[in-house]
Length: 178
Image 1 (tube, one colour):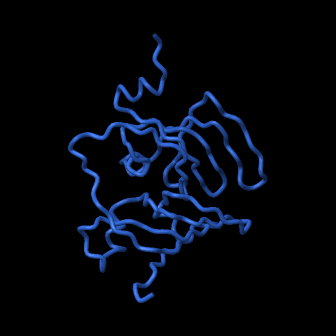
Image 2: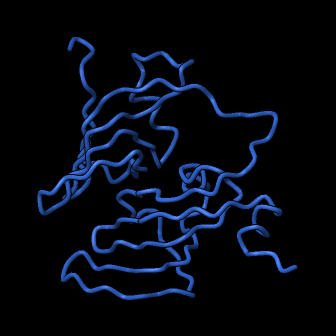
Image 3: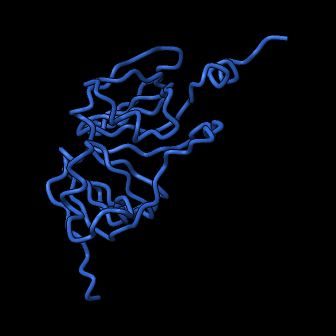
């Protein structure tokens, strides 16, 4: 019996992750194949680009769209504003689960013509007074419970958004004083 590509990837320890990748001028919807279970881990690898199998590319200025099913493309990480994960293949986690517990901090961030309100995460073992300093270890930061404001003023809620820290113009943390 023939094995699907997705089943073959899982057998090899690879995951397929579908997402929308936002740059200043493009929105690329496509799939990434990675040994990482989390898209943020894949994006935080040491490479400057990554391969994506695009299904659709939309120019944000001018609104033109193109269908790219069956092709491959490379995205330069430095140009990414943020990523909207759509579907991450659930792979079996190893018994030595290395995922750490996190604490969250409510925040507001500006990314070019976009803004978001959500929760940013840090390892629970870190001192919360050094929250911003702890974020400097990674280029791509996952935010959860996000309300994203688009350039046209519309807002949408997302369970997760992965933000390129180098593209943030401002990150404001909510005061604990309430």
